[in-house]
Length: 553
Image (cartoon, rainbow, N blue to C red; front, side, top):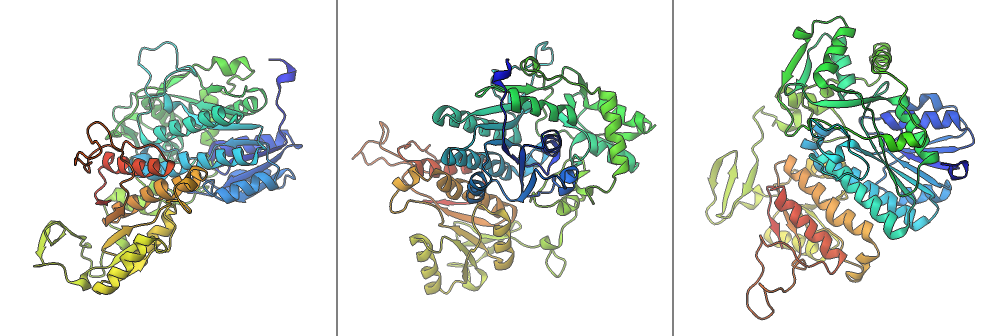
């Protein structure tokens, strides 16, 4: 590639740069290119910290903005006011274990957040490079005897909720590149390790556990093979992709040096002079654990990148950093358990209690008895903790309390009127459906027995509005509804979701005038409007995930 092809940015927005990999990239660019303006956008989630950006704190070309990539108004504002011409999109939920227990948060952050950024780029028209950071896990499992790694044109076959959301985000990036001509580049990288990494990931977790004299938990038999790159080498790779990467291309960031998880644990034990046999503990495997990821990194090497740090050197540097900064992340006991499961990504405090098999205060009534969860079945009985309470012709109204979303809508308003007439206590939810924290606060303050969702976007004044406001439509109808569903599921609450019949159209089996209608289990077949697509998407997801609540149409 000649010098004429080198890209020179001016104002770069880096998302998620208070996190691990992106902080190393941001610090490197701020240090090496003082004439570039670097704007960092990060919501400071549990695995990010402003301390990761301390090397750049006093730099004149650095600006930090606390905010969520899911906020379209904020993203558009930054692109315009900061004159952003380049986006390096790192922000994401990335830990596989968490995705098995909190998959909706991964959909919200990884897919919806990416969609907001892409739409902002399309609307403002100022961005000359959009670098989307993906993962090697989108390729799925590599065959054990494969000699050549996955190349950039290999099929995507994700096997867990995390990698599925990253693959979904890639599809959006590709579509915006082809449909709207956005100048997009995608990277897919191997595992990264080094200083500043939150200890939910393998290497820092093992180091901290070894420092505390605790066993190192290995999923399954430890034979799973991974490739590890040191963080500074990866930061250099992004520097190369930024300046020399071709628009519309994908670049693997990988290494040919592989090692099993068991060997990683042994290497860390040896650095601490620990007895491997006594220090390593084998635990239950993940629901699905890919045996091997292997990348072909020849394409990136062709434009000037190479791995510089050996495994031994990188591991030694990482160990030295963690032993010098043992309290960098504060209390991380919840992240050090064998199988982290976060009900809410906003914190890790509850996680440790869950892993120990204890209940938190919110799960126990004042009399120290486990809270009894009640719901009404189709026979007019209240069921709670497996017990049946017969109520005759119904349930006493004082035992019910409804939490209703959609106050300003027609159906939501009618629900409130019905409750008033029937003498049923109710409150309208004040939280936005896509905001998990607000929904949890609504439930905690209202203490409902049932949740009714009549909120959503149908169009202003009709569904044609949704065609030109797709971000707002999918945010309310898909992300919002699924987030509410997951919150209700975690709270053991029955959710009645008011959907629509506008997801079906007449076909050969259901012909006009035949008297044969669609059943609840039928697959939606109408794709004539974006509104209908979003409502159908939610219906399908609810069925696929067997979410334990009723869907009323």
